[in-house]
Figure 1: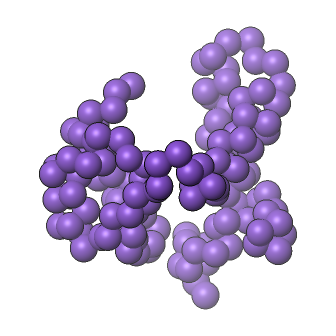
Figure 2: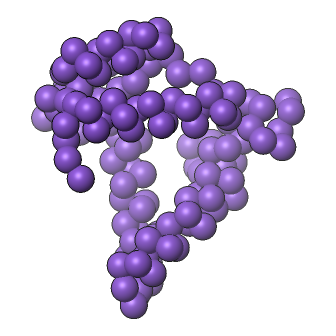
Length: 127
């Protein structure tokens, strides 16, 4: 709900814990140029974890193309895919959609495989 450095760092802490629980090692984080990502608090949080911080070039949305495409897919396939009776109903539909997107929906960039197929040792995958 805000763009404060404390909020960004708290989100990163939760995201990092999730990635660790999935056996995912994060080496780099790409952000825009928001002030919360320029703060010492953000810099120190990533440095403590040994993570390199990269920033997108200003006014260059192509740099962040994967996120832009994901946002468009969110709009087309979840947020406005069907009429919802309320915002609560829309929010309740999100976890199921996200699971399908990550585990079952084929992606052309991955030769028809879902994103979860690219993550080694994800729960149930021991390759």
